[in-house]
Image (cartoon, rainbow, N blue to C red; front, side, top):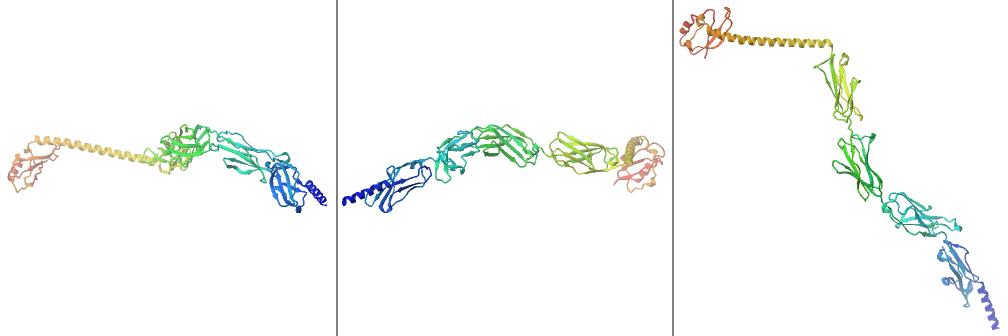
Length: 507
């Protein structure tokens, strides 16, 4: 009886061992879930269930349970089986299942259009990989890195990245990553070194940009400094040759830079140059002469005529001049806003216009100056023109006045000569004629003091005329305290009665 019982138990155990089976998926790719099932045993008979991989325990359960691998990786490949321990302390072991996890996509490889690009030039990066033919429907996304910094807009469905310009500071290690959109599998490429090549500066030039193509006072001027070759950060600077001082400086990733002068002055005219430097060597441009054209100022009109008054037939000169303005200057002349003519001043200054006057030329005159930068008009100058009769009367009046002036001059000269001639003749007559020929009426003189001696009488002035009888002579003496009036009477009794002597008493 006991032997029979043992045989029954042995048969049951053998049947149980043959029924323990490990169930696993037949095809597994990276990222797939793997579920291992240990089947053929009832829960009430199990005290312990263990899953193994390559003879190593993976997990132990106290009841019948499945073993789950959430996202398979290549390292999950191996030989799996399960084992159980029953109520009667026997061990059971399942069949061995070999699982091979297949690669979903290959490790990406970073490629570049150039691993030694020229500074300033573009570079194209590509993250290359390939999906398994059995999983071509899987979607991937890509990301690029430089020195642990993300490039571009992080993750993208495109395996390519375009970098418009590479600079010297962009030199470094680059790599890319590829992953499934479910984020289960991510793979990284090997790092690749990219070294950016810098080109020295060459062919520096300076040019001007101004409205209308010419530099005009008061307007904007742009000084453009450019190079034909050179990479990296280029530092541009501008200078005026006369002073050598810097007008401005800019550093930027470009082959040209601009310096703006908002409002040019006449004093800004001169020679300029610029320099460019990208760290290799500072290169200077050729010197450029920049002339500044100055608009004309308001002109001044001056009228010039032969006489004090303008008259019909006169030649009137109209002179127009602008004190400021770059030559050449064109002057236009107007009479009551009607154009009379024009005249040019190629070297600057003023210009004239001659006009033969008629009676219709009275009115306002003006002029205009223009050098192509804006015309300026002068103030109006009025002109009044007298007729031909009035002009003739003016000439006659002037002739009469000059004739009278000539007559007066002639009379004055004649009187002067006459006076000198009679003075000389009078002195001669007074000396030669005897004093006894003259007689003085003694009754006309009355003295209260004595009359001096004759030798004390000194003639002061003698007015001598001709020797005609009708001429009156006047002789004057200075008498010094005459002693007796009787003496003078006696002395003068013998004088000629036709001669009148005047005696002046001196105090």
